[in-house]
Length: 364
Image 1 (tube, rainbow, N blue to C red):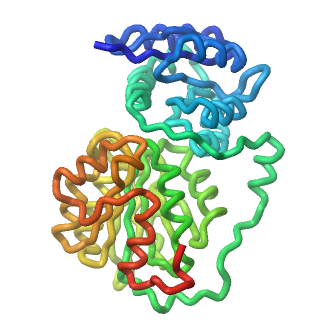
Image 2 (image 1 turned 135 degrees about the vertical axis):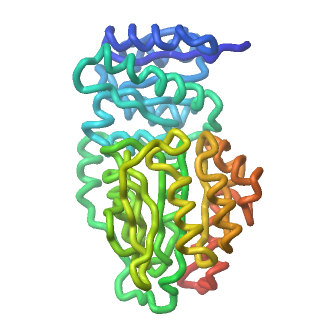
């Protein structure tokens, strides 16, 4: 069995040692090198040609985001971010995912040795997923810290005076995604007009990150993007993202759809779970729903998407060529949940055309 070759890049000798030990305990992977700064890492990557690198953000000589941006433009490869900054500064994590990182793990803020060992299962699983990911060259330029801070202050340019009267409030779009999903969701939502039907989203993400994810999307989209709140009414022109570490499902209050945000057991090893959201959509929305399954590892949501289709929804599934990880889309296709399998860049237009909104104002 060919082992997954990993290079660990971190300025902490303790973390390098812990990650090396965790990786080398696995039968299917090995740590082939460690580097304490990106300049050393650059030469090591050239020499060792690893399958995956783990990368810290805050390092000497070159910021981790700058290094990631250069790497993904010049020599694209799977990267898993492992950094204390990813929890404290979730916007930095979102930027790393935009630049092309496959996934991230947060170092614990206290009890580093015990904390990383507790996260060992999560770390090696994400390395395995990254090793099988489809990585493409990034055209995104890294921002320096001053640019990134100023970007957060730019007000969102929402479309003004756009009527939503032509779109039935009965229609609803629901999206499920995991690994690679943050950028895939951005691709979909930035193509929706301000008067699109309401959107509900489950993206596998831990607590503390979805509010930053929603804020970033909101700054880019014509629709309003929010972290879902329990009991809030779902409105046209709005998208609601399941909070990290909580399940999101739908219910009705009179003629309105509402968000139900709740704790509970893991479903398909996830919280939030796509299965939970899609099952509720099948029950509550039925034929007025549009389902979208995007890139992700595993099978979360596939069976529930088939329930949606059986209830009358029309479902789109991302194709293999455009998926970072084809697990969840493949499972949805295999269980008969897909009405159309499309490249990521074609899904939004196909849905809008099916809604009958293919006028000049809606074309993208």
